Length: 197
Image (cartoon, rainbow, N blue to C red; front, side, top):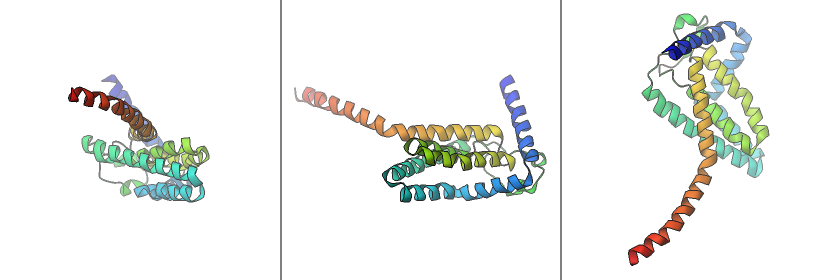
């Protein structure tokens, strides 16, 4: 109970601080990046550029990034938002008009952050330089979601965790599949022999 109370206080303080302390010019830059990331446009565009300019490495990074983004979106928007009906931060905490342009869906978790982190974390192992380049807009999206009043800091943290998990899953899935497939291939002949006896 004490942990939840502390989390609520931290969410309230973090939301109010981000909404009131970020200068208007920086807020506009954050909003522009968030608008580009809306509907995953920014990440699809980045994947296209990577695939076009990066050869095999770029295509591998783009495919991993888009796959991780898809997993993160399914988990955050398709599952978690349906289960957690958390209201958005109160309008009176946000001293600017960006609060009027936020969705009505559940605040928890931040789907924008989940997608951004998933894409960046999945791209980085294949093409570290592209991963570094994607980190800047990813951080901007995460900060903007709190600054605009669309999310609490804990929503963004949960979105980032979902994004990291999505990237981990996509990067590990082929190895897990190959390992289980080889184990299955070893078990099948034994099962067939036993049946024939």
